[in-house]
Image (tube, rainbow, N blue to C red; front, top):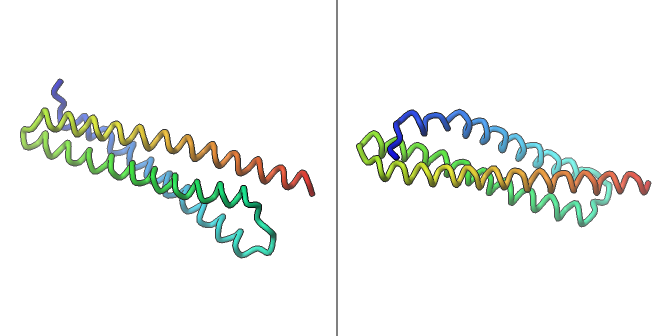
Length: 126
């Protein structure tokens, strides 16, 4: 099924907003880590483990999102040059990377919720 230039162009705003959301999550996590390292309170090893996992996952989310965006651009170039079959395949790859990025986002959110639950348990103990 041939696609037109407008099909991949529809993803541009969505991918851009996702990348912005991922960047905001990264900055929030970086600020949290800096605040934790500046405080004198002991940090639970479970909390540190969660923070490390979240950093790795956010990095992978961003990489998959940027790769999806790059493939989307490549798809448009290929379609523009008349390589419709190749453009369709590259667009499919772009969609798969976007899906991968979204799945990672859900995983990161779950880890974040686990970290909040650990924090609530610590508050409950004190």
